[in-house]
Amino acid sequence: MKLLDGKKVAAEIKEELKRKIVEEKEKTGKIPGLGIIQIGHNEAASVYVQSQIKGSKALGIQAFLYAFEDDVKEEVVLQKIEELNQTEKIDGIILQLPLPEQISRSHILQAIDVNKDVDGFKTENMGRLHLGEEGFNPCTPEGVITLLKKYDIEIAGKNVTIIGRSNIVGKPMLGLFVNHDATVTICNSLTKNLKEHTLKADIIVVAVGKEKFLTADMVQEGAIVVDVGINRTVTGKIVGDVEFEEVSKKTSYITPVPGGVGSMTVAMLFQNIWKAFIKNRRIVND
Ligand code: NAP
Image (cartoon, rainbow, N blue to C red; front, side, top):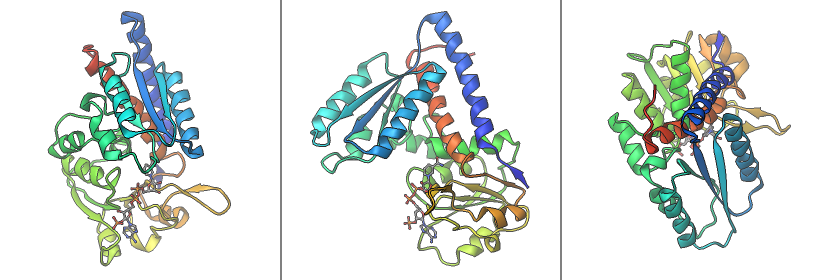
């Protein structure tokens, strides 16, 4: 069994991005800008926002936080989005969850310029993904594909089973695997005989959000297991959806949690910001 070391791969990707950002700044004086929209006071979201700001700074990306009170009117946020769409210093816009009930996630997302949608959640970017066209792909599924490729894992012709069909993980993951010529099964909570689907899989992606969900009896010998889940145990430890100790004995490759897909997700956000910067500022990439 080999570990798919997302932490290491993510660090390499970030190092390379940092190098390109420094080089670009020296050449043109321009740096990428990220706009973060946060509404209300949620402690977990604030911790996440601070880590995004810190991570951006470390790479030379300028992050701007636009914080609104819980009772802000939707039109005020939409007006800010419009402003950020027009501002040259902002290349990417992300919306922090959760949102208060008067704010529609869909209204906000759809207001973001398609070329600044670095989370890749807009309908148009989702459509482009499924059509195999160039756009911004959601960071978690893009991170999974990038990680597999970094380990030279062949995807074409493989049987892939994805457990979970959320809009941010399962569905875009399906599209990306299809685009990479895999044969894909996608499961949900109503799937009958889940084990039948996982046992035939060369690659299993689990994105359910339940500790120890994937057990060793559900995995064929030599399979590759990608654990997207993030769960906090009663003792406060972060674990994935896979019963790692037993499952890992049967796999050829497996992602750890933490240090697997989560690390890649963060790196992919920065990669999308760089991509947006290149596109929005019409810089020719080498
Ligand atoms: P979600 O929106 O809650 O979706 C969970 C999916 O799992 C749903 O499609 C659900 O089916 C399915 N499911 C639940 N029980 C099942 C069962 N018994 N059999 C088969 N499928 C079942 O969650 P999410 O946002 O996709 O996130 C999933 C996990 O990944 C969470 O732990 C989350 O924290 C984590 N996550 C990690 C990252 C990262 O960077 N590593 C990023 C995003 C999310 P139905 O659709 O039928 O309800």
